[in-house]
Image 1 (cartoon, helix red, strand yellow):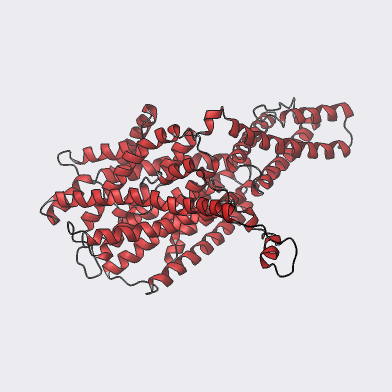
Image 2 (spheres, helix red, strand yellow):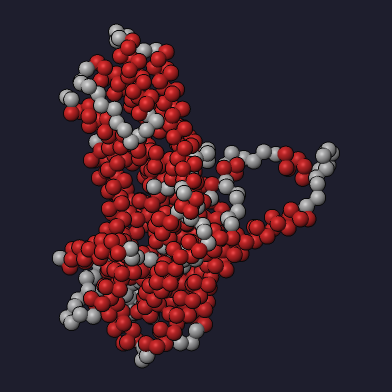
Length: 562
C-alpha cells in the first residue's frame, strides 16, 4: 500500500511540475525529503538488488528502442570517450580525493564505491532540455549514446568495488579480467535475446501480446546477463537496439502501442525512484548522526565531491574535444604537400586507400566550442546514482555493517541534488546565451531534415505507383485505377491526411493493398537513407510515426466498412 501511495504522489507532483515548467526530479526529491520528517513517518523499504533490477532495465531499454544504432556508430568515438573513459576517470579521481580527505574515514575501497556511484551522469534531464530548446542533432546523439553505456561502466566498477569491500566472492578474481568478461558477454546475451524476441513476435502476430512480451525483454536480458556474471546494462541496451531495429518489420499497431507504453513506463519509474530516495532522507541523516559526532564533516566532504564532479567533466571534455581541434589546426598550419608520384611515398599509398565500410560511417566532424561547453555542463546525476546508492548492501560477507554506508549515501544524495539544482537549472539559459538552439533560425535545420524525409517518402511512393500503373489488376475500370493511383499519390505526400475508401468493394480492397505497399516502401526508403547517414534519425522517426498514424487511420476506416 505504501508503494502505491508513493507512486500516486510522485505522479501528481510530476504533473504539477510540468504544468509549472519546473524540473520534476528535483521537486519530487525535495517534497519527499520534507515528507520524511513528518512525525511517525516510516519510509517504504525495498531490497537493494530489487531496486536496481526493477528500475534500471526498463529505463535503458526504452532509450535504446528509440535510438538508432547507425547513429550510435557514427558517434561512437565521443560516446565511448564520455560513456566509458570519463566514467572511469571520474570514479578513480573521486576515490583518490575522498580517501585522502581526513574529514571522513573512507578507505580507497569504500571511496571507489562512492566514485562509481557518482560517476555516471543522467542524460535524461539533459536530453529532455536539449530536445525542448533545440540542441544540434549531433550533440543530442552524443548525450543519448553516452547515457546508454555510462551506466554499464559505472555499475561494473560499483559491483567490483562492493565485492572487494564486502569480501564477497566474485566470478573472476582479477578485476580487469572481470570487467572485460562482463563487457564482452553482456552484449552477446542482449543480442541473442533480442533476436529471440523478434523470432517470437513474427509468430505471435498480435499487437497486445507483442507489447506485453516487450515489457519482459529488459528484465530477461538484465537477469540472464547478471546470472552469467556479465553486464546486465549492456545486455539490455543491445537487446533494445536489436528489437528497436526489428520492430520496423512489425505491424503499425505494435509500434504505436509500444511508443506510448514505454513513455508511460519512463515517467512512472523516474518519478518513483526520486520519490523513494527523497522519502529516505531523514533516515540517512539519522544513520549519519549515529556514525559521526558531527554532520559538518560529512557536509564538507559532500561539497568537495560535488565541486570535484562538476569540474572533472568540463576539463575532460576540453581535453577530449579541444585536443582534436587544436591538433587539426596545427596540422593545417604545419602540413606540407605530399609527393604526387613515387612508389616510396608510404603516406601517399595510405591516403589513397579508401576507408573501410564501418570507418567511413563514423562522423568525424568536430564540435564547435559552444557545443563543447554545453556537453561539458550536462553532468546532472540522477536515477542511477540514487538507485546505486540505495543498492549498497547493509552488511558485509562477515555480517558486519557495510563501512560508511550512510556517509556514501549522503554524499551521493548531495551530489545528485546539487548537480540537478546547479546544472539542471542553468543549462537552459546557457543554451540560449550561446545561441545554440536550432529554433533560433525559425526551424530551418529541422525543416531541412523533414524535407529530406518527405522527399524519400515521395520517391518511394512514386516507384511503387509506377509499377502499379505498369501492371494494373485485371478486371477493373481504367478510370477507377487512375483515381486510386492519383488519390494515393496525393496522400502519400502528406501523412496528416487519410484517404477514405467509399465502401468495402473491389476498389477498396485494391486501394488498401496498394496503399500498404506504398507505406512499406516508404518505411524501407527512410530506414535506408537513415542508415547511410543522409537523413537525421529524429526526422526519420518523426516521419515513421506519421506513417504509422496514417496506416492506423486507413485501417480504421476500412474496418468500419466491414
